Length: 118
Image (cartoon, rainbow, N blue to C red):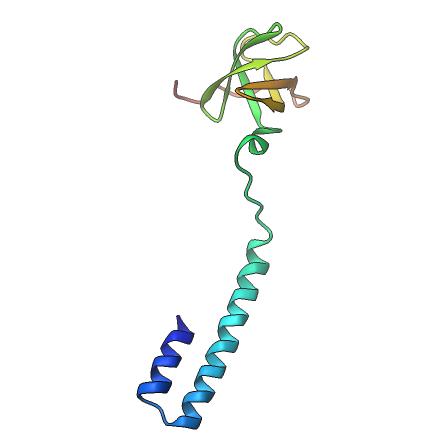
């Protein structure tokens, strides 16, 4: 935005050498801003889709032996696990297979209350 304003001022208002200098300074500021934002945002990795579910905590709402249902982020999912899991047990998503989540028991013990909804 700063570069666009500098270009308009260079053509319509400012004399030639000063206008070119302002465009050059605005270009340097814009490049610096892009570099700063890229460095700042590189800390935050956005995870969406199936890979975003892996490792998420789940709460079992129907017994899993070997299939059942669980709540993840407030949504009910069909799940399966090689280890039987009781209602209210805590588990984590190991992998996603279509619309079925493969679970593993959570190493950190029981989960809190199930999330509201559904």
